[in-house]
Image (cartoon, rainbow, N blue to C red):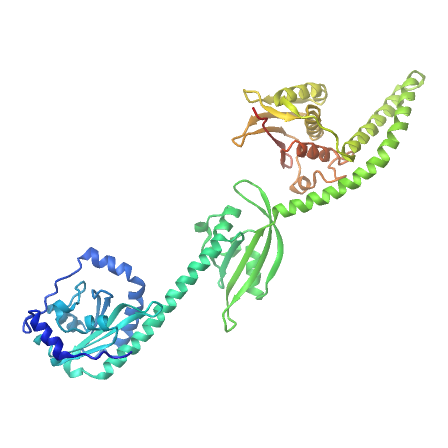
Length: 532
């Protein structure tokens, strides 16, 4: 760094004119109290850490010399003294202590205030000082520059005995200062990068995890918290193997140094038991020299797209079902009606009523299947009117009560005390409730209880819960419900739930199924409330 050219003669004359006594001790008119000094230390903590680290190394190389090193801020306040213990005690005797402010009006000629003023390195030796008590000292100061804004952010300085004075001291101090400036610049660049990375991580719509090479989790962004329900503070520092769904892939990346891309993961969120589908990518993180330092994972919520794909797939299947139903169902129904009519006509001619009952039962079953095909074959005109949902449920329960009694099923009702009005097709909702009741009865071959609950949610939706204590279903079985021709029953067609889903969809509602094997099943239906 360039050395300042100082006219010491003119400066001494100015000191005389200002009334400074050269034989008196320097009197510092400004000094920080303990709280103010502590606040300054906090403001300059990042810079102080760097400066003190490198000054300690510098002083270690000169530890036999009586040197005191000082760090000041941009206003000339002395923040830290380091170095030879006796030299620091001597400095305090003449007033050079942490918290004092170096300024020309008090000090006359001092290296720190001159370095701040000229933004250059300063050397003051012996009689160049104005005050006589400093004539046995050599002082050197170098400004710490922030080159991005071309401003002084502080100084580093040293004071030693005159016998140790040397131009080499200023050169050494300037070299240390260059190292300090580079380190501070790197820290600030890294700080800015960290801020940018934080902004990117916290605004992206992808969940992000970062793991160290040791297998510990280093970072976990806000969207990852939101989508998984995990709290960052609970899992940072934990082993990645403790992370369900993701940990195994991250560990494999660390072990093999190879990435994974587009891995489909099914994730059940703990707080609401909702099943989500993620697409996961995992990549190793390398330094420029090829050293592995960690792994990075990102995952995006694929649930809605997966549902859309499934809906399209089901739609294609429904279209196929509809085409088949349109071409077959009507052809079957006509002769079926004729056969059924003649058999009923010949009822008295049957030798065994059991044969007659069996034939009629199977014909009714065929007729029922054809009816379900026809529902799915093409859109039907639905007539939505404002209806009391609980009244519809009561009527459906009354229709089903005989079947429930025959199968030793108890029907329990727990209704909202007020009427719940929805825009609906009454007959279609009855068909939904009847289908659910039939499924519950078939799941309880030895009898049981069907509990019916109706209520209104905070989201202004009508809610209907139908719960049984039957044999239940596995998650895999629940996932397949509504697929064409999938059934859990030996004699089922797989069309019942297709009909249920289609009717609920037409009513702009939602259906959710929870079930546990040997514990039972709960069907929850939500429908929008009718406008008042």
